[in-house]
Structures are given as structure tokens and as C-alpha cells.
Amino acid sequence: MESAEWGSRVLPSLGRLSRGPPFGRMQGQLGLSLSSHGLSPAPRSLANADPRRTAFLLHKQWTLYSVTPLYRFSSARLRAYARMLSAFIAAEKQKGLAVEVGVELDIKVAVSSLPDLRGTDQDQAAILVQLSLRSPISKKNSEDKLVWSGCFCSVFGDDLSEKIPPDFTCLPLFLTNGAESYTSIVGSWFQKNFDCSFRRLAISPLNLGWMAAMWTGCKMDILTSAIELVFSVPRLPQPLDISYAIHPEDAKALWDTIQKTPGEITQEEVDVFMDCLYAHFHRHFKIHLSATKLVKVSTAIASAHCDGIIKFLQSQYLTGVLMLLTELAICHIQ
Image 1 (cartoon, rainbow, N blue to C red):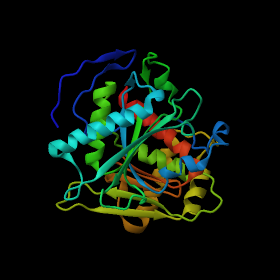
Image 2 (cartoon, rainbow, N blue to C red):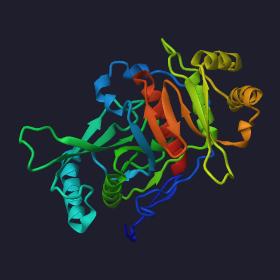
Image 3 (cartoon, rainbow, N blue to C red):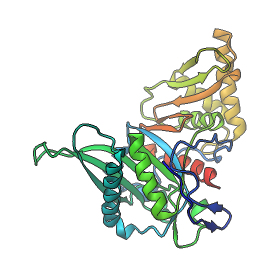
């Protein structure tokens, strides 16, 4: 995709937010740690929200991006945006950038608001973009095939939304599920129309450690899934990963002996938790995990990969996990 020179706008405390490089796989490891709060179920303000409205997020693999504020985006024009995006995709298809090859397919675009998917009333309602395919040769009454979804959201994103002018909409976290070619096309359209820029949101080993501790400490009615940590061994001729599975009750008991104040987490507590796990592994296998790189964390709450891949597994903690990801996205922007 060719880049173009675009105007840029200056926001308070955020520096220059221009379109930057073309939408794509620009990555950066986050070195900042998460806030010292624990992970809680959905707040009372969302207790009456319809879980069916957010169920589409569960048990799917989502790719994470950070997004700078959208300029002059209006939630009242979502239907118009859907028509404009559909025309843009059709134009890209004429250029030979269509994803499907061999069969002519109609791409339907839907853009909708998800007011249930936010942390507070100050957050902007999430925006869901969905692409569906229907072949002209299929039956008229056949259902469209959903092939790509993208969700812009902000869950407790006050740190950024309070600093931006009224013309900007703060939805710093963007999650996608589907072919990367569709992600590129949709991202390009948003860049051109709302003067924003996207970056792949990688997750550092430091923040993966925080997630491991937070998710281990979550209260569950039944602890069924093992806590799994995956480590990559550096400087080897061939890639080598080490998988470390811990019984959830054992991990929860360890964390309960470390955490001093329920609902709050410190970097020191996270370090002690991980060091205890490393020491236990070393006693059994004589391998120093501290010399490796933590690349993936899997729990009953969610799983996260350093490349910026997330899978949500529990609806009751969905808001809490999105809050952490929103915080990381804001750190990535500022």
C-alpha cells in the first residue's frame, strides 16, 4: 500500500497525531507496567447490560491495535459510514485487492454501536464493523457469511478522553478477527476519513507477567483450566518454546500468600509470584526460566500472546480485561 502525505493535528499532551505510516504491522514492545488495580468483574453500571451484545467477543482470537483519536467521527452517521466503506472496498476490489479469488462475492458492510461495551458513561460507546460475504449464485434466503469483524472500544479510557478536544472521538483499542487483508482495507478507510493512525499492539513480557498474576487471582466458581505460561528460548539455531502448566488451585493459593491487599497489585508482588514459579520449575527441570522470554499466558479468564493476540474466555471478566488492554493502547499512543 502506498503512503501519502496527509495533514496532521496536534492534541494536548499527545504530540502529533498524523496518519503516519500506512496501516500495517508496525509493532513495539510495551515497557510500561499496568496500573496497580486488580481485575474485577463488570462494574455495577454494566450489571444490567445484555451479555448477548458482547458474546461475539468470546472464544475467538483477536488481534490488537492502538488507534489515535478519530477526527470528526459521528456515531449518528454509522449507516452512512457503512455505505462509504462498502464503496471503498468495492473500489479496492476493482484494483485487484479482493481477498476472495475465483468467485464473484458481494461484500456487505455493517457498522453499529455497542453502548454496553464501555466502562463508564464518560467512555465512548464501542463501534463494531462487520464484513459479510454472499455469493450471487447462492440462494436468496441463505444467510450471509461473516468473514471479518473489527471493534473500536474504550473501557475506562478517561486518561486519554479527558485530554482531547471535542472534535475527536477516543476509541484507542481496536480488535480484529479475520483476514489481515480486510483489516488493511478497513484501516486504510478509517485513516483517510478520520485522520487517525493504527499500530499493532504488542504485549511485553513484563505486562504478560502482570496478566498472569491478575488472572490467577480472579475468583472463579470452578477452577478447571491450568495456568499455562509459554517461554521462548533465545539464541538457538532452531526456535524452542517451553510450556509451563500450573494447577489453577496451586497458582491461586500461591498468589493469595503473596498479595497483601485484595483488589490491589504491586510490581513487587508480581515479581515475587513469577520468581516463585521460576524457582519451582528450576527445582524440577534445572532450567532457568528467567533467561528466557515469556511470550504467552493462558488462564480460565483469557489468553494473551506477546504479538498482540488475545482470546476472551469469561464474560464476567470481559470488561476488566478490556480495561487493561485499553490502558496499554493509551500508553502506546502517548
